[in-house]
Image (cartoon, rainbow, N blue to C red):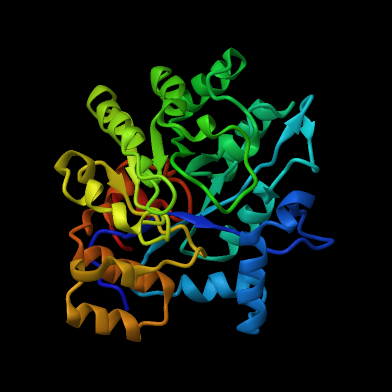
Length: 333
């Protein structure tokens, strides 16, 4: 049982990757179905005889080391304001994720709205009422440029509602994508200029595999000095493409003070590649730990990132009038 006096621990970056069915509205686009990532994740589920995704996620959320998790929906690509199924990677409806969150006491809605959809402003109002704690964007996959002038009203309404925007930055190999520049750190600036609280997913960490350029991370570091409304997250810190670049984050006091914990669940994390950063005793403890979120906490605590688990209480939009209103105070009820 969790200590009832300690601050709540959050994970702000948990994906809802269910399979399409007649009643859940999930779409996996035709190009994404043959993507190596999709085949890999389906292979894992087949080999492990996995139960339906919602059951697996609910079980993992039972970790005593995690108190709240932001469950992310995912909007698709749009053409003339309508969903473009052909060029969409994944579409996971906000309503589906909201339904899951309503049935799990630790789950918080992280809605996703492509600002190019014809009802984007209306959908923002809907998810605000539903209690979303942030909005998630993947411009490189959702096929829009955050600098387009037409998006300004969306930014301004986000700022008025005090809903943070979680935007993907850095390399990405799990989804079909559009021009790589749409994952550059520069995509954060238009929202920041409009006063939106922005969280750079993955903190613009560079690739450990194909390209080791630190240029985008350096830009992120400059933006942290310029914008007090900018944060990063630690999602996929132990992922194959970032694990060997984590020192950029760990050795910079400013960055460490502005990151929020995220895991990137259910993406597999290759924490053993962290090598000597994790002492032998912790490695043994983590190896014996079967729960995904408990492993994340033990590893990041060892790396000195424990504060990143409690910091989201001061950044997310956490309505005090909701059944989970205790989270606004950051204390376990």
